[in-house]
Each structure stands twice: as structure tokens, then as C-alpha cells.
Image 1 (cartoon, helix red, strand yellow):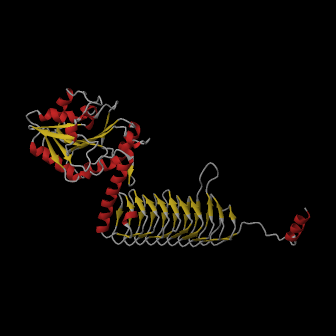
Image 2 (tube, one colour; image 1 turned 90 degrees about the vertical axis):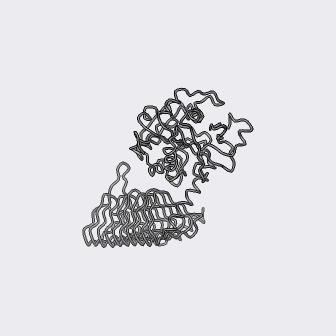
Image 3 (cartoon, one colour; image 1 turned 135 degrees about the vertical axis):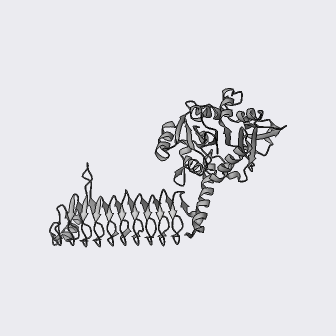
Length: 463
């Protein structure tokens, strides 16, 4: 595109009152990512030179998200939520110097890069002042109607429409491309003589339609692409459609889902071919699943780097951690806070691993807690073992060497270090470092009180 550049302006200042949520609407999640993420991500595949987001309601939270996740995107502030036209006015300084701008709501997560790019090309090819998407919804209730008559095109919001106008089947998508100088000039004369008493961006369409350059409506075939998300029902429907598209892409690339209706995979997830996913699995964030792995039922993975041939047996919760090749996890395991599970390692039933490294071929099979620990290769950790890592003020590290055997029900009171090839006796409380190749036993001597049970029973009978 020639000229001074093309921008994309996302309107994300609205309250979203029908959501009835304390979270700004554009930050509500679909498959682990905010609504706004989908809009900005899809714009990344279009020929735009720069992007901006208009913030208003929940400004701090939306602004923080944009600055962290999309630092190249500029922020424009709408101090009062006074309509879509006013939102665009708030971006006036940013708009100046652009040749064209695509303006769209922050709640159209299904609008594809292909469709947005096509609208931009149609606009430039037509050399008009405005080009926008219309669509034919099954039920146009709630949408503004596109009225074309006598060579003019205008958009009438439903609250301002007559009964005849409400019968019009073509609805306004809220996705526009404007030639910026024409848009800015038109905004200067924008009024708010309508039922809401707001500045409507739709009024700009009619004004530009009366100019020589004119305004043009083009129909988008897939109405779902421009379907807004205004309440929890629409949020769930959008999530379902996006989920289906993501699953379809992965399965066509060689991922097997036993029951796709119950599997949820986020848009950032990468999955290699020949991966098997059981029912009721959720995978979100920038997770990556390696070839030949199996994810068992009722497992949740969030920001997980999973190697090849990993087996997750089921009911496993892994977050912000890595699982190396051939590791076996679960069932009922919890791995979190940057933990690293080595090649061939086993994390078994009811085991929690937090901020720890478990070495290659090490085993933590049953009912244990490894917090702030470094466990060496081939070490076996017995059932019921706990790293006592917190003293009430600070977290401390436990270091267990290679080829160690930790007896069942061992309490490792950090900071403590066990040398390579060392052992601990079952039921021990280990408070001091254990030298390499040593056996550490830290428990009181057993005492048997003979006849105690008989005397206790006799005393109970006399009372």
C-alpha cells in the first residue's frame, strides 16, 4: 500500500456491561488468551504498518496487558466513554500522518487475517473514503442495519431504526477502513443526536457516502468472523468455534484426539505429529508437546515444554515447567514454578514438584513433595518423602546427589545436601549434610512398653 502508511485502531474502551464482570471485556479469556489477543494477533497477518488500542474502562489493566504482551502497540486514552465516534476522536493525534486505517472492535476474536487484509485491499482498490463489512446474521436483533438507497449507504443503530429499517437483513460489523484525512475531517462535524446521546462512528459512514469519494459496504461470507462478544453466551460460542478450528488444524497435522469435544487447546500451543490426547485435556499458553507423547485424561498443561515420548498418565497439573524425553508423569501429580523433569524420570502418584530439578532416570514415585530441590540422576525417592523448604520466612534448597536412595517417610530439613550414592533410613528427619556413600538415620530409638494395651483396657473398664 502506498502513501503515508496504514494503521489498525482497536476500540477497547467499552464497559461491556452485559458481561456483568469486574474484568474488562477485552481481557476475558478464550482458551487461555484474552479476547484482545486474538484481535491483535490476527491483525499481525495484515499489511498494517502500526497498531493502536483505545482504552477507557479498566484502563490500567488493559494498558498493562498491551504494554506487556504487545509492546509495539500504542495506547490511546478515551477519558469518557462517549461512543465509538468519540473513541476514534481520542486517537486523533495517532491517526494524523496515516493514509488509511482499519478500525475494529476489540471483541471480534474470529476476524481472520485473510478477511481483514481483503477488506484493506478492497478499500485501496476502490479509492473510496470508507469501506466496511456488512453481514447477514441469522438474527440481526441488536445490530445496526446497513441501509442502501439512492446510491447512498448509511448505518442505523437499532435503537434509532424505524420498524421498516429493522427488517433489513444486512447488519453492520463495526469493521471499517477509512482514508484518514477524510475520516478526520468528518469527525470534526460529528454530532450526537441519537437515542444514546453519543458520538456514533456509524454517522461518519453516511457523511462520507455523500462525498465524491463515497462509502462502500462489502458483504463478508462468514458471519461468525465479525460476530461480537457481548455476553457470556456469545463468549462461550466464540470459544467453541475457535476451539474447533484449532483442533481441526492439529488433527489434520497428525495429532490424535480420542474425543475432540472434550479437548481444549490454546492458540499458542505447538504439538508435533503422532501425539495422542485423551478426553478432557486442556493445554494452554506457549506449551509445546513433542512427537510420540501421550496426554492422559483430565490433565491440565499451561506453558509446558514437553519432550518426545513423554507419558502423562492422567489427572496431572503441570504449569510453567519442562518434561524431558521419555519422562513419565502421574497420575495425580502437580508440577509447577519452573520445575525441570529429566529424561526418563518418573513423577508418580500424588507427588508435587515445585521449583525443582529432577535428574535423568530419577524416580519420585509416591506421595512426596519436592520443593526447591535438586535431585540427581538415578536417585530413588521413597514414598512420603518431603523437602522441608520453608522456615516461616525464607525458602531453602535441598540437594540430593546421584544414585541416592531416600527411605520412605524421610523429612529433609533444608538447607541440606546429600552426597552421591548416599542413603537415608525410613522415617528419618535429616537436618545435617550427608557425606557421599553414607547412610543417614535420624529417628528416635523404638521403645516397647509391654502389657500397656491390657492395662489400658482394664482401666477403661473400671471407670
